[in-house]
Structures are given as C-alpha cells and as structure tokens.
Image (tube, rainbow, N blue to C red; front, side, top):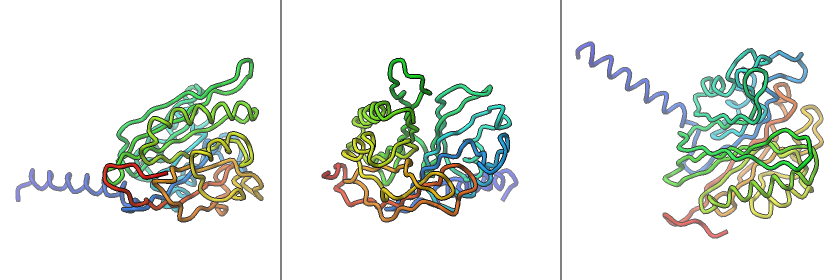
Length: 276
C-alpha cells in the first residue's frame, strides 16, 4: 500500500468517525431534546465577565441530547471575550449548529441557536411581533429542517418577550402561523417562552401542540425553582413523550435549569402524515 493511498484511506476513516460522532446519540425511533437558556454561559454565582462554556457543554453532553434549543447566546461579543459561543459548543460536542442573531450587542450579536446530531438541511428565521409603543427587545423564532428516518423533521427554537401577556400571546399566534406550513411533518419547538402554563400564550400553543412534562416542571430560578417558563412542544400524531425532566442537578451554569424530554416516534404509513 503506497503512502498516498494510506493517507487517503486515513482521511476517509477520520471523516467517517467525525460523522459517526455527530449521529451516535440518535436512536432509530427515539429523540432526546433539550431546551436550555444558558445566560451567555455566565454562571449566576460568578461575576459578570466570567464565562464557562465547558460547564454548558458538559451539561448538554451528559443529557444525551440529539437536538438542543439554546437561548441567550453571545456571538463574538466583548463581554464573552469575542468567542462565537455556539460554534465552540458545537465543536466540543461534535454537533451541527445554526445561530440566529436577535440583536446586535457588544461588538457582536446576541440571540438563539440550535445544536443537532443530524445535518441541518435548511434554516429559516422569523421575526416575532412587537406591540406599538411598547419598548421591547426584538424576538425571533429559528426553524431548521433535518432528515430523520427519511422524513423531514422540523426543529425550532425561540425566546419570547417577558413584558406582558398580550405581547406573548401575539408572539404565540405568529409562531403558530409560521409553523402551519410544515405541520404535515414532525415538528418540535423548544425554548424560553417567558410564560407560565396558565397564561394565554401557552394555552394557545397547547391547543395545537403537545407539551412535554408537567406544569410543575419548574425551570427558574436555578435554586429552589418555582416557575415553569421553558417548554418543549411537539406534534402529537408524530411523537409520544416517554419521559421529561428538569435537570435540577445542573444548577451552576445558568439562571435557568435545562429541560430534557425523550420522544418516541409513532408508527405511520410511508409518505403519509399521521392522524392527529
């Protein structure tokens, strides 16, 4: 075997290993989904400017997540030492990624992002509405298309405003409008919705989607949590949630606790959307 051929073979094997690393966590019929507001990787018990992406990566790795919706990400900002946080996390975890800027900030950007063990085939971002004369931060929803067992799978991440219930309801209506175009396919949407289960925005989303877990799956504050504002929504005809938990032991990295859910794919006829 000559040297050039050995080098070529070695590079092919290495590429295959990297590809396998990205898909190793994905089961044939199950998905592990994580929603995590990471507070730009600044642990609340540490001073501003202290950034700990290693802890965030370790939490995601230990969760076994195939899909991760992340909120409060910095991208090359001064407060986060000029680091492209999502790219660093993707490299540490061997995952594909997509970042969406919601506002320019600190010489870079601040926004939301997605990590995936599946290659990202397409990505779309949608601006969520604001209310006239209401001073509120711009908000978006990010939706990526993946291939799961030969079926398009859409996974979304969002971060709603916290200002008032009317605004959150308007953003929920807009999100449902954007998702209506792909609801014949399996859809999962996760994020920080800044609303408790009894609020109108969550009730509206729950009228179309299932919500993993219980109303008492409290995600804030990180110590002694007493509110649920983070959710993982799913299309019921495609998925059945097998388990859901708040990762209470992971209270150091952020002011939110991660929310983890495991979904089983329901059997469907080839090429057909399931009954819902």
